[in-house]
Amino acid sequence: MSNHKKVLILGGGFAGVEAAIFLKKENYEITLVSDRDYFYIYPTSIWIPTRESEFSDVCVDLQELKKAHGFNLIVDGVTKISAKEAKVTLNSGDVIDDYDHLIIAMGASKMKHKGIENTLSICGSPEQALLLRDKMDELLEIGGGKICFGFGGNPNDSSAVRGGPGFELLFNVHNLLKKKGIREHYELTFFAPMAEPGKRMGPQALKMMDKFFGMLDIKQHFGKKIKSFEKDGIIFEDDSKLDSDFTMFIPAGDGHDVIKNSDLPLNEAGFIKIDDHCMVEFSHKDTFCDGESMDRPHNIYAIGDIAALEGYEWRAKQGHIAEVMARNVAHNIVERDKGGESFKGYHEHLNILCVMDSGDGASFVYRDDKRAFMIPMPIVGHWLKKGWGSYCRYSKLGKIPRIPGM
Ligand SMILES: Cc1cc2nc3c(=O)[nH]c(=O)nc-3n(C[C@H](O)[C@H](O)[C@H](O)COP(=O)(O)OP(=O)(O)OC[C@H]3O[C@@H](n4cnc5c(N)ncnc54)[C@H](O)[C@@H]3O)c2cc1C
Image 1 (cartoon, protein in one colour):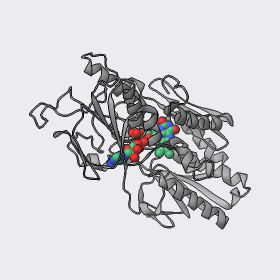
Image 2 (cartoon, helix red, strand yellow; image 1 turned 30 degrees about the vertical axis):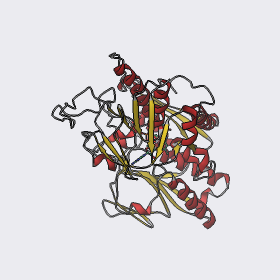
Image 3 (cartoon, protein in one colour; image 1 turned 30 degrees about the horizontal axis):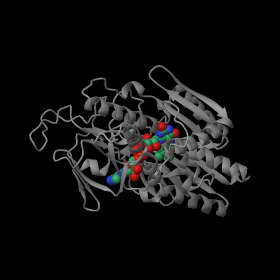
Image 4 (spheres, helix red, strand yellow; image 1 turned 90 degrees about the vertical axis):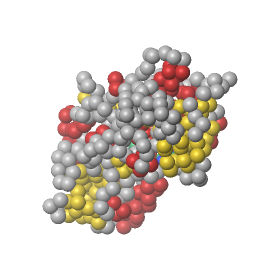
């Protein structure tokens, strides 16, 4: 039975899908809007360029999720959000204004570097994973070349920097070349503008990464700001050039373009300001159209990569944090609607958690406010990550039980 309260969720990624699943369990009427008709499991997309996974292995059809959980689905792009008028405009021209709660979960845009069109990113639009695969095929056909993988920063928000998938993809490429017996024909380089990329994972992980690079004969090019990308290389601030036949570069996340043009409160990078309960943090001067103050409590939440994370300097936008935020918001909406005050916060759950794959194994990376460690897991780590990909798909589709907290 529906409790007739309507929740509009914008975005069908980790955050939006998790919120839809958990609010549906509480009998809310859910409408989820996504500009893609599939949920994309980004963490396992790292195997597409090396042909260890197909594109379809990484996608979960939103129609199937809709059927499994019974939410309404609109496949359309959000073009405008007016918080004050309580209206959401879609690409088709449709306007949605009939909701009791709004959850914004549309992920992040990317920093725009000069010459970025000369690069591909494993963290960009899902289709880029296929272009990376084509480029990899091309380079294998040629039989040798210079491969440069890297990531950049966002000076306005360090939590939006994403380097892990770059390391993972490079280690997978190394392994593919080794398996084919042609590794010595390729020069592999990892580059980043910061002096110690990966520092966020903690001092032990940083040392281990350095060791891995040495063992795998991967060159390191760190500590120089990137000026631009060219077809055949990367130009740095001192005009030096790193030659490259294939550049994979992960720009840091930046505020979502739709959000930057909205009336939502943003941090310097353009991420939505929220409180610990993921409620959007308007200023006390803001008012809705009816003159009501937008100061809390109100009915607009932001979760996942689109939200500004506060706290530890090592904090990072991650999928499991997006899901914690989603489950918290589902709980907080129920609590608010029944007049309770036992709200849940995301801050106490902030940690870095990643199984960093290398194609022939993985390392378990963990950091919170008390500990930071990296544990190598040869062979089994790779299969654990593969297993997690299947778990993610089938548990979201309701075909296998959920492990609490996962
Ligand atoms: C290659 C890669 C590997 C990763 N590995 C890990 C990992 O091992 N562990 C981990 O915890 N995290 C990992 N992450 C991070 C994790 O994937 C993100 O933190 C997570 O996807 C954020 O979820 P989200 O729902 O906020 O955003 P997204 O997953 O980006 O989803 C946003 C959704 O909004 C939709 N959308 C966007 N704009 C609009 C619009 N205008 N209108 C309608 N819909 C829109 C998109 O189609 C998408 O469905 C990885 C990320 C990448 C890219």
